[in-house]
Image (cartoon, rainbow, N blue to C red; front, side):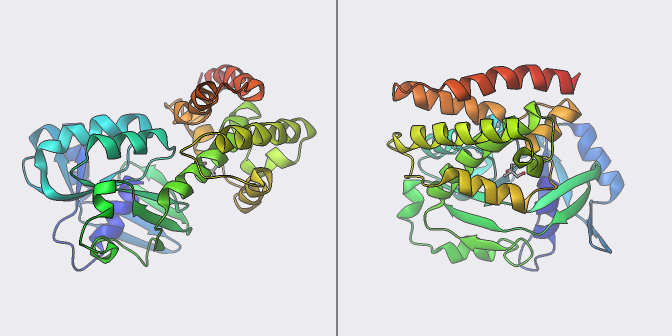
Length: 302
Ligand code: KPL
């Protein structure tokens, strides 16, 4: 995602400089050698002359920070560049889940923290060589209360983003959208790992379909009793619609399992379990999914 966004930002005429902030110096050198980020889209190929900066060496002010890490790495990533923030720095979070977003917007009360939820699809061919595979929708909105009071309109931020190329829409209630996406991720992602299948296949097998229905009922019950969550109706129907629309996709969690990489799972069903416990609600289906997930993930990652 970071490469896709960097290449799309680089295309904008009004953006002075786009840098990829990288953890390893060797990655900075690889990017320099590649001449930037190569972006493939349909039959087109572009080389975006994006620069890399090694995080420990960064000392210039950051105007906009797009955080493209996994949810569990976001907080540390932001802290590692916080010394370059000015009072006007805008932070945009692109992670799945809901816990981390709430946490970061509270941890940076004097900054404007936004969340961006996207269904744009991208994958890496090779390092810094990205394919923009699926043209989806992106929704952007304010998370932090301080930002809600700011005098600048969302136009300021939208003007600095590739609104057309990334199909970005302003969402005045992004938190609701994140909660619903969280519910959908809790329903789909772990099951695709347990059944080791494409999204759409969850609907085809009686066993996975039965678990999916039971899990959706439980998620809906837990979230409808969670004070900070919006009320959710017909979760199964919403999940079914996503599964049909993304039938051929491999969920992000299954992709991670197959590559043996850490996934964002801890921010899905285990957080749902925390929410259930705090409302004193039993969540046997979810607990079983969590237990089965760990074994299935380990087997796939082996
Ligand atoms: O967001 C997704 C993911 O893979 O993380 C879903 C909605 C499951 C689509 O693949």
